[in-house]
Image (cartoon, rainbow, N blue to C red; front, side, top):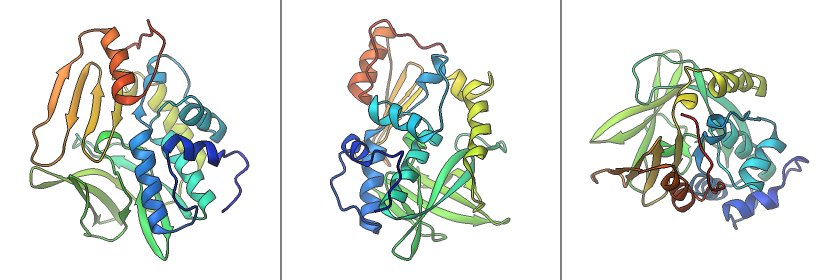
Length: 266
């Protein structure tokens, strides 16, 4: 195990209920990834409350671990990268252009990780929300993997550029495109400022809380709550009645507690 002074690994493992080996093995990587992805929600609630998004490790750890909150990609994957390094994994921080839900060419606003485990390379990403990975994906072009009811693969385009895809309705859909250029924290700081403050940012405009799980994925956008149970199963959705029901759903479906009367500007 590698010592990272700012990381409280014991508190993180308690937060995610991880009780496996502390070793840089593929089995540990998969178990850590699943534990994090299914227990720490993807959410932008602080942005809607006008609060800054810190990307320093102590600040992220205080929020996601100490206060049992969630966050978006930079918060999730910077914390996860620190944990993986503490286990002894080799980790490269990458950036991607999101393609999910759009045909426009977007800037590189998403963070993901390339992880080395037992001589193989894996994509790890605990910060893409409801459509994201439950487990690492092998960085092998065309290799299809199934995460419970969801399937993924990586393809290669000219550039070279790689694309993570998911399967739905018997067709493959792009989630995001990325290169292997390593990213530093300063690269994420610039994008983080835009995403968390610019009026055109979707994170400023839309309340988003998401939590994937092996049986279902819970997705809340503004007051629309969706349950996704995977391929071949119809999405279930309903509209929340008011702000009080919103707070109840945050607690019951996402384990996020806020004081009565809390409101989110959107």
